[in-house]
Length: 199
Image 1 (cartoon, rainbow, N blue to C red):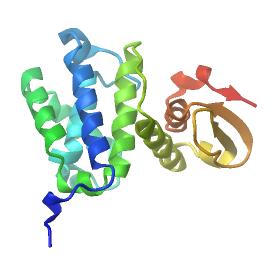
Image 2 (cartoon, helix red, strand yellow; image 1 turned 45 degrees about the horizontal axis):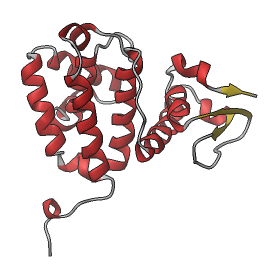
Image 3 (cartoon, rainbow, N blue to C red; image 1 turned 180 degrees about the vertical axis):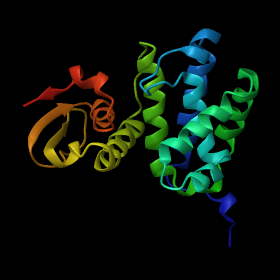
Image 4 (cartoon, rainbow, N blue to C red; image 1 turned 30 degrees about the vertical axis):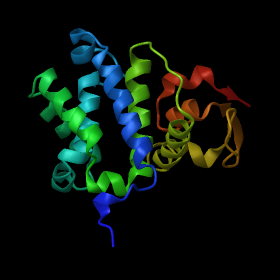
């Protein structure tokens, strides 16, 4: 019987690919943009976003310490990343991309949505764009659906109609847009609302 580390799990390749794309985005930033640039995550610069997504692999124990206070755990991870140089943080990021933790591999379908959303937080916050891969766009939409139940319940009040290849979800007043924009809006990123059509 093969060991878990000898098996490629569902969504694992997509997760690794998106991690590498995020690293490429961050590598291209100036030091000022990396350390203090805007993102769609309130009060977080790109380095803080990276600290958070890396923290889901390396600093998972911080979630246990904070219990249900997810925002406090996220802040602790970002604060920890603030203590190291950009070079060291990017070194961690390369290791993180090449060797996801077992928990990330097992939860790759969920992790891909969180990662894709945070990649868009960085790009959109800096006024940049990319062609979002289809599997990542679907994962962002799925992540938005899940987060909305906890954050704002938009998913319960709207019929969400992706215009780029996913079946509609929900009931209520109609909102149309790409999977990526709908997912971000569902997760409270209201900066994308102008890209959506509200019935």
